[in-house]
Amino acid sequence: MAILVVGSVAFDTIETPSGRAERCLGGAATHFALAASYFTDVRVIAVVGEDFTAEHEAILRRRGIDTRGIEHVPGKSFFWSGSYLTNLNEAKTLNTELNVFQSFTPKIPREYEDSEYLFLANIDPVLQTEVRGRMPKAKLVCGDTMNYWINDHRENLLRVLEGLDGLLINDTEAKLLAKDANLVQAAERILAMGPKSLVVKHGEYGATAFFSSRSFAGNGRKPILPFRAPALPLAEVVDPTGAGDSFAGGFFGYLASQKDLTPSAFKKAMFYGGVMGSFAVERFGTERLQQLDPKEIDERFALFRELSHLD
Amino acid sequence: MAILVVGSVAFDTIETPSGRAERCLGGAATHFALAASYFTDVRVIAVVGEDFTAEHEAILRRRGIDTRGIEHVPGKSFFWSGSYLTNLNEAKTLNTELNVFQSFTPKIPREYEDSEYLFLANIDPVLQTEVRGRMPKAKLVCGDTMNYWINDHRENLLRVLEGLDGLLINDTEAKLLAKDANLVQAAERILAMGPKSLVVKHGEYGATAFFSSRSFAGNGRKPILPFRAPALPLAEVVDPTGAGDSFAGGFFGYLASQKDLTPSAFKKAMFYGGVMGSFAVERFGTERLQQLDPKEIDERFALFRELSHLD
Image (cartoon, rainbow over all chains, first blue to last red; front, side, top):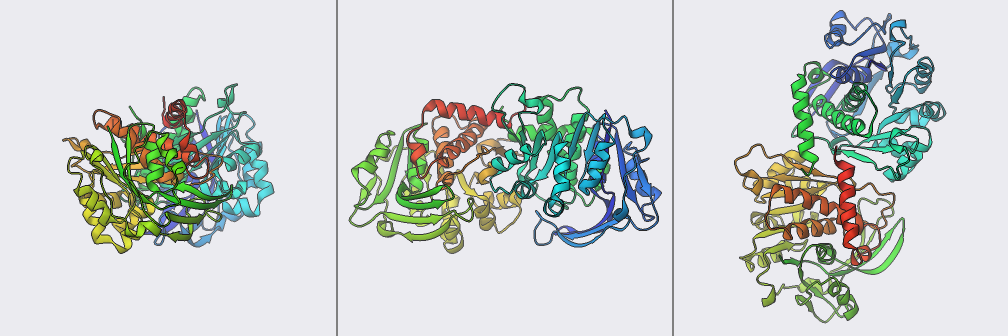
């Protein structure tokens, strides 16, 4: 089933202990779309400037990604620059230029309207709500957000959360959103805000999913257990940028490729999220995600299983 | 098979967001012994003062723990006081009084000499080496340490590491010991120092085991995969004190209860470590570990499996 993702397509300049990369093709929607493209059809809604060339678009097209929803406007694309020199787990933002993103109004091509899976990547919650409203037939809607929207646009964000089947955020964001330092209690508070499920990403320690009693997992059985997926211990993290978006792409891509949303499919999706995140950080930008062999994905999934299963 | 553990038996005064407890029976050897006692016979070597009464000893005896190696001397027992009010993941030490521990010279009762499993809890590495040397027949030796010994007694600690089958420490300690911020590279460096295996405890995120090619897991198969065990997401952590020692007790206790040291037994031992750690933090001090029903342990083990396994 086709996924529609709305989010940023951007250029990133990144420095990490492994080196420096100038103006890599990046952005949440790019990482998400590339990661999800190994599992299902993906359609992108975003805005880019004149610096986004046919060559950049070809990177997405080669993975079969539908780019008709990428709007080209005069000016420069969203640009971000960050450094991980002091802390590989958290970027220090050096520069953010919204550029063409500043006046972004998502337009949904008619060909996208039948998308059954909708992913609202990290953008202004007002835009997330708008896109959500125009996709009434979407049968599964997940989304992401970040500290800035949690702190300064809380009311708008709460409206997004009401309509989500799943929210994917990291520990810091979850605790900030819930105003609670205990992860389990934070999860309960967030699920009470609307999302039927919550996936909290722990970086190098994996991710935990929590389920509301209104979720697919809550059909009369109680209590609903959370689920923990591992991350792969890596001897070198070349560039953590986009690891979370790649996790989301692997997770949602796998779910969209399955006939039914079952607890078993959800758990496997968590593993595939970790798998795609582990590939993403092996090279700068989206380099690794552009050229994966499906066999590599299968092998790494098996590795994740062996890493975490008793038998 | 019987485990001999050498370490501290102490009194702890602890404040956490859940409350305050005065002079709980604590110490690494106490937590370890109680946790391990649900799996196998445990013998303790420690020193206590006059404040350690018959009632305190009865807490250990009721769990079948052999306390003949607990030496009683004039003076006061080791005392520690700490606060978790600002951070549940790391204690702020308010007071440490070594008292009778200052001049501790471990004596091994003749009845303990046939112990096949030896655990060197967190004490002066000089004492760890001494005890290790007097137990030449021990077939499996694991141990713990802490920042203080890593920073200020490195040479002595390195001598201990040479003789260990397994070292159990937390992330901070592992990175400090290896002088490397990447966990995988840190693990490689530590394994090169001697331990055949390394278990790194991640607190609320579980634990990861790494294996040297000289370990049981390294019999010709390569590369040797690490193994990740989950922790239980808990809505309330009443008192984190001794969680790591309880993990070690569950881990080593289970291993000692098994006929052979196999990869499968090691993995299950990691799970039982997490199980005992999760019980320990539910009450102040060792209260919860004193009164567990074996059925509760089985049920929680099943919970850990369901929490982390795809099928």
